[in-house]
Image (tube, rainbow, N blue to C red):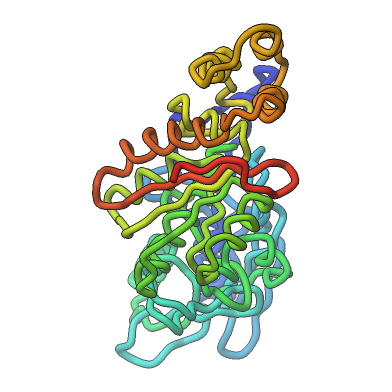
Length: 366
């Protein structure tokens, strides 16, 4: 999570923060365990986040029977366009084996790890380390208050989680059956895109653990398909980088592979060539004079040069170059490659593919 992320919308309206699935699971665990020990659910239920904040959550589900209790909380992601916004996160708590402490289990809608490289062992439920620590803290605190051993089994489920997970990286990361329970601070900052960047990093971790030495960061589906057709690498090698070139390249600097290919549309790769690391249209723009200067260096002149100088879009400049028989795509790819290589360092070799809207490769760094 990035505390420097935008907290206001385009119109200046303040954006509302939300809560991670890990925070919801922790609150649900606390209320369920309290019901198991006392017969009473906490509602609302208050927890302490790693940063010291103490949010309160209203219950949306509760059930209590012989030997178990469960509580559910609807995730509120604030104003972030989070795929799990509105999902019901349920914690079911039962007594565990004596002396075994807290154990975690994947219920319906929570995935299981099947590939190496993640911060969890293969076969473990996809409940990340910080949420586990938060839930363990809640269990130990309540157990001590009631004079019992902290030996409990916690099963986390997410209603419709398997369907929601299809919209995430989980299938490609080898997390099958549902979502991951995520969060490092418990707070979702709107449009910080921390979950996406986290997934890029985990994708690199999985590729490295599987011995893959060449990964591909693509800006979208069209560029990824073009790279797949060109390179023929295992599916785990392909990372949906989106607009977050910096999130990919900076992590590769400290977690390198032998070769990195960046594949993207002409406008986005132009931004990278200009030195931008966030390629979103709202956070970086194409400098059309930058492209026109490149065309002049390639030998364009006369009326064509005037057209290039007055172009409205990057793709219009690319069309002018194509009509003149000039390899502007290659020139942009080489410049973008230099920028990316400077970020990654010398541990990985970078190359760049530029892909047009039809899925054809129109530039490469070599």
